[in-house]
Length: 295
Length: 166
Image 1 (spheres, chains in turn orange, purple):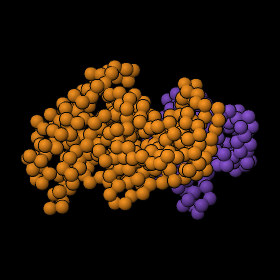
Image 2 (cartoon, chains in turn yellow, orange):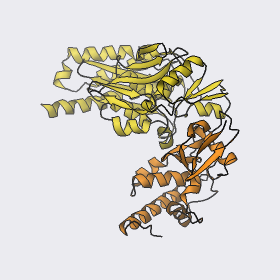
Image 3 (cartoon, helix red, strand yellow):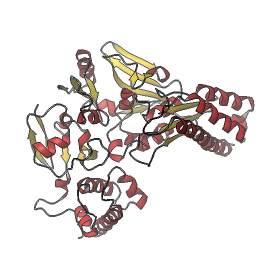
Image 4 (cartoon, one colour):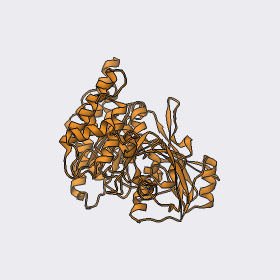
């Protein structure tokens, strides 16, 4: 096995082009588990720890460009304002030690349906972009096109994830996750939700209940139409039990979970409907407060 | 491959390191620092927690090659040069927070990191900070006592003007 240690991003891209089967490692919280248990022995490891720009983020007021290796602990401390949904999701990752190392780039690279970042990224909107780079250039991949199968993403063998571009939140966002305790839990299932008042849309993301992280498209469209037709964005009136119930049912219908050691498909569907109702209620209550205090 | 880094303030060098090897293995088997314990090898238990450039991490999840030229501080680095116990270590002894002792090194480093950030954490803060450290003896109440004791002593020491009160 080779251990490649590029000092710069350009060196990293050159190394990946030369060794397309090299496994990138940053926080190591996934890669090293596989290595320790001999699940996976790649021909080469490509260490990205020396590429310091991967641990930087910037915010131009519209979009946060989040470096692939910004650890979850810093997302929680530094970005809970512009990226509230992702920060909440980050807080449910592993333990403090894991959050000090792991980041969104690794979650995207592994593309596990159970990755905690994914529901939050999907909910943040269709204009979330994964910045993938190679010696050939940079591609901006819409988050909806990124996940292509169980633990598979659409990256080319010579590409590395440089950053994720996430719109700054323009409304309340929530994240909810089911597990046996509050730490060190791989999600039984998870749900991310965001209100986007500026565009009059809502965002959803389902985790651990389909082969890939997935959006509940019909639920989003239903709620968008109800909010528009009833003038609820302007009035901030209560949604009513019927709307909340229907939204939960549509989220549930969007999932295609399996039975496994962490939970049954039936339980996952049930839990998704509950999480969808709760996160909608929480965010809508926050939104009501916002427009009332603005009035 | 050869890996050179700083461990507890001293330069160390490990030869014949396998490229997929963990920092934990290097510490325990190659540079004579067996304080960090190997239990789960998947970041689940926290027994191998060390500082990597002042950030507490699971050393089983750091590839050996990633620590080249960096600074590592292990449980062995929490005490004084002469073998004197550090403040957190002494608090664990005094509170009876050590049973089989296997989880203790990780808890000591993680507690040290918590108190560095917040010398007077709430119980909820302590539980959150230690949520990645498992004690299979389930001695959590004494561990909570030990962290509170360490916190009280640290705060008293700071009030007394920097010197750590015993």
